[in-house]
Image (cartoon, rainbow over all chains, first blue to last red):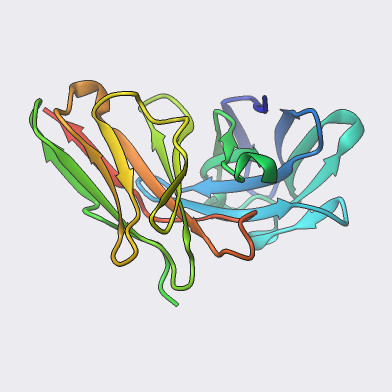
Length: 114
Length: 114
């Protein structure tokens, strides 16, 4: 069975500071990995994904994430936070043999202080 | 290319009524997934459908819930005899047949049961 743990339900950073959102997964084989962002009362927008290939993945809005198999991690980073980054972020995993249904972490609410 | 469409965006029902939630996938997408986001909980997989077929319904409650994706028209998630505990945001996601590793989400339907 797959599971996802997001460390920290709330993260607060100052504008211009580094954003680091943590995600660890549990899976018997390396799964596909995703980060989604959700703004209030809206749907989920795909930030980035890892399926195969290069382990450092770049996404939209300046975000990137690195797949580290030895640590079973897929942490999301952004060098400089912007006020518009304030939202809820979800890490998710899937596997092709399970129909690619997504298993989500509990989410991390990012607050950006001016 | 329009994104995933869901309607209605907001739905209010009284206990015991039926709720019908509609999802029109992106053009060319033949795979549809439904997820539920309960208050204070993460997103949970409900059902995975292809045209005219239910592939995986392991996340669907055993009673009162059903889903379909007919050859023509949108996918429908139907909840019979709604109860207050059904109040949640219901999200639909779609993917193309050749890239089922990535899902694109609709804006969601927020169901409130009075």
